[in-house]
Length: 363
Image (tube, rainbow, N blue to C red; front, side, top):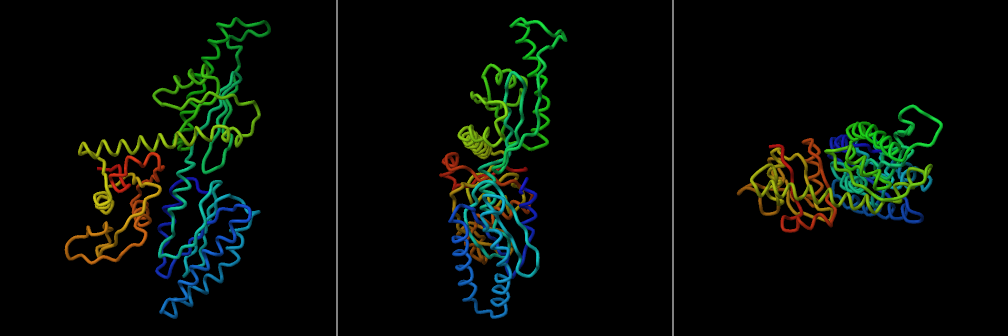
């Protein structure tokens, strides 16, 4: 299971001039295995046309040796909805990953692993904290990459003054409940850092979520008015608020794009446009690379190892065309320990005039 970008950074360090086989499959009934086989046939046909006999034979032999791995990857009974496999031709190393979200189906042979489908899938289900707020307590659910798991339960004792037995006055009950909600806030705050939640959603009665949101200040959690029955499985809780989770992602992406835009236009630590952002990426100045999820870019790699937009290389600099410049940008960002944000299409509208590319900078 992929838990953070460290896995992706390890992947892009996996280089093999002979090639790295990257396989993705979404295990849907009747669709995953045939589609993956078709993708692999296309790779084989391309390799069979290579003029270098030794390289051709080596790669085809490696593809044959991967057959058991391919069968396991596409097995409907195997865990994970979205699955990936990465295997360098010249070693016996095989890396696998599984998510509970779709990753598409593809087979790619390049000198480095093909990671864009993985990052795009991770973007659709980034780590989030869901707090189910009830009079009985606060239940914390960790949701990431399609999996939901209970991580903490704060049970409230509404007999706050220690006197049991008789009925409580409504006012004192309300005051006690407020104190209990405030006492739950530190646990949520601690989990945000420990579990690296990108978003926090409070689900329940607005009177309760409002109190907890106030206690979490300056954090600005999203409040969702919904009734969640006690004992409802974590996955079903998240399923009920799937639409709100998706909307939160779009809002977060839009806010990040706006921040990069404002900084760039003010001459600060922001960048807009393919050519300028590539230059800063080459210099290692990018802290977070923002790419339109539907973007496709043209360019190449110069003798200096830098990436250039089409027609933007320095005069006299020979470049080798990069058919998938977006993948190379992601790779360079991960190599320089920058974050990569695949921006939802609704939020990427603001990047239309800037080639679908922006960045937040380190300096």
